[in-house]
Length: 217
Image (cartoon, rainbow, N blue to C red):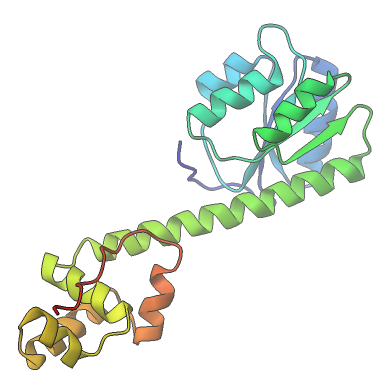
């Protein structure tokens, strides 16, 4: 599930704990500190009704009736939730802790934990989620621009990013150098790139480009 939406300045926290006193204490403190909080007594309540936002973290109790924390974590992963998960637990089996970390938990706090430890884990998780969300938005933006290129412009784009000059591309494709120059200008314009280095930076970390044309021997 993709992350989107607005939150408070500090970020949003999903709190899942079957202990009402824990929910009241943590949500009250976190809200006073400027975070927005939505809390759930049961994992199924969260899985059924939570609206994904970013930046956010999930504070997840490990031992609850019905589903364990690692089972909820696995279900979130299957549903493509990328929100960082911070486990909070009074007592957990070593195997549960190992599984939680292998499944990508952001942190694991044993009750009773200090508010300082919790806030450190929350802020680290929010920063990570904000970074991932920014990268996702960037990738979507580049994808949208790339989709405006014609098939030929996509080929030229791959060629110029491979370091080939207009003359080299023309020789390989059998087109006139002036035609390649025109395609190159259109690629830069549609991708909103000011220069080749700007274009290269846009595509770093993406898998949008087809292989460049191979040199004809």
